[in-house]
Length: 87
Image (cartoon, rainbow, N blue to C red; front, side, top):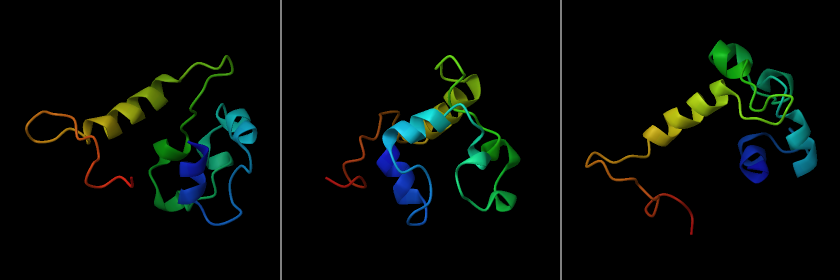
């Protein structure tokens, strides 16, 4: 997850280590992910991934389920990404 995050951000932006990223997961994304938040949905910037107790938030779960739903093919089977994920 850390590498995917860094790949999505400008060079040198975002948390530099896995541990730093984990420490930031209970903080709203807009406070530590350097994106053009004025161009993105308000709810995305307000997303908190983990609670202070280390539990996944309901909002993060719902956001993840929305992305997971997009991976189902028209025939109802799960697309394993063989044609679009790097080997």
